[in-house]
Length: 420
Image (cartoon, rainbow, N blue to C red):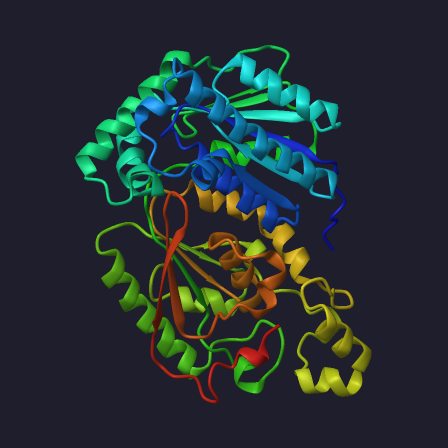
């Protein structure tokens, strides 16, 4: 059983950095990760406030620090976002992420003073990037697609945005104040610097921030081929593949070879036979993770749902009422599964080549929820059918998804009801 005890005191994570240094991408990843782990988290992006209240067609001169009118307007939007942030935390929020440049000591002082006046500690997270290739990629793939440059000629937009960066750079003062709590991320995780980092949440973020990167690569999620227990509608267990499951394993091997080409693929399985057998036609060098084992159904292992309904009606109805949090007697809940998957997420984030995860329905639901930023409580209803490959390609702000149904068809449909 996994302990969920934790410090849930409200905290502000304030981003710092020049434009096109990946601040928003980092902020979104932090928000996705903490929300998935069960921490009420909200992102307050000052750029969105500016666009909503001042419009999108602001030329680079608007951001010139010598433009007093523009400077006051930007300060107003920053304070409006901060007011909303403080109000949300005061009404029961746990983690508020303040996504802004916060590029001067004076601005950081102001943010700190206002947050501390409400009793909320602040940890600054600065993204520094000296790699021109990363900056150029970020500008072309994210900034030029933003609402600020909708309908603008790409080359004109590029010139304007570079001029905007230059305005911010003239006034930029990197973090270095010894009294502040901060994390510096240099060149997308090449180096991470910590200063006065205390407490549960900031410390938990460090492994995630250290392992982030921008290298595009696919992640394939698939359940094992149909098992003998699937055929019988039984929960859990450690049964072998059925004949149809063996056929799916062969078809999966062909699919991966065609999609990956000559690229090396990291193949991950659970420690259970049905996933290991599904991986065998692909490679003998898979990595088996106990964290990928199916949700533990406890005393209900090896039973059908109908047997549970008849013999243990209190269990059947209690789980139906809250499938995400309900823990099987002597077993696990979906919430427990997410906690044990946490270290695996860090391993997944650090991979730079394609990854194939051969797992089980409940576990893959939890992984899928993290990767596509779905609320954790929605896990029990996410569709992860048998004999289907879900291809996810992480991008700066989201995850592109494609699904491939591979033969053979499963008798009676998906057989999903045979799994938690």
